Length: 484
Image (cartoon, rainbow, N blue to C red; front, side):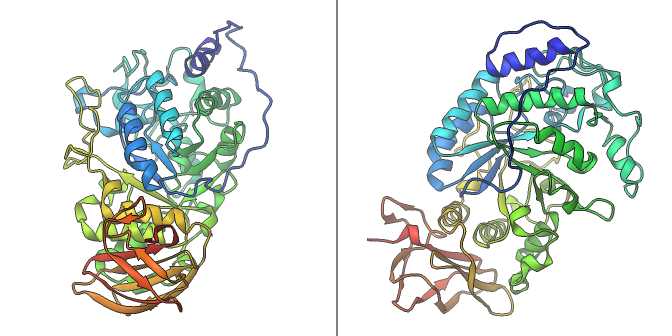
């Protein structure tokens, strides 16, 4: 086990492999303080789901950086199972078999190059981290993994063996039993004994290697299946001050608030509330949104959809067109939580993996290819990403609604947005705190080099302006998009 952990460090950091006693646990390095809450980027986080590393590097430079996205959330980079008999489904990437960096999206060198390129473009890299489990029952004896490793469930040579997993080796049956939720198996996945210092240190070695390559944050998968103290011990033992946010699907047994000491937490009630409001055209109910959420905004990560909800409970997704775009635009404009967006690949079968060659290696991603949806380039979403960055830190002001599907609000003196989820145009004189001037409506077209691709709006000295918002459309003005 010891040699394997050292080998992981060597792969990630380029350091030499120094043998030591196989029975010894990896040494605990000196650790500095770590801040586990508060997204450090002004721009939103976008999950570039299943994008290969080379393609993502190019997209950071050409689109994500210029649009103001603060960070990309990348799919798990560790070696995973290869489920050829199931058509290389998307979920194979969430079944680790080692902590080496050979996945269907690329190798360690390509990953490191992507991190450098994205950071040069002003975009941080957050990794989707899978630390609750390893491979599942359907993967027993199905090696080699994506990097060539042989393995079986509960036996990952040189890394984890039988003693490193919990003794409850059956699926969770009673979600009202917290002990069972945390110690039995989620859909047959080998449940790691995260209370073990050996397991924790092996995971820290993997995660610290990513930080040393330039990764600055982690989205942690399946967190409700681990005790909060285990999550805190693993991620609180890292240097580099990473931003950590945790996937916690709260219920009557597990609450989001249990985990806020270990990082920010995904707020699933937000997506239920906001996505349904835009789907039904009942936007006025969002006026007091923060009061209906289980966490304060500074601890919350919010989304309209993610790779799971797209497939399991698709209230709104890219397939819903303008209403989906408006909901994501609202997420970016309204001051609650850290927005997490997704850029998807197209699918009909919920289990389908990304576009790939005959061996399951992910094909290059391109927004010129209809197989890749590229929600981040849709005008409303792209423009509101810039808006979000421009109004960071400002308060909600000047709320207006018509009692139904039309709303508008300001963000201090830095921005103003309006959303129309009804079938007719909205023409209204709005009251804002914006300084006088001519503003680009970034929801209708990009603002680049002082020029507006869409319409412009004149704001008077008292902050008022008259504008028309089209049916199923939006308006967004901000101080960084003044014309002239």
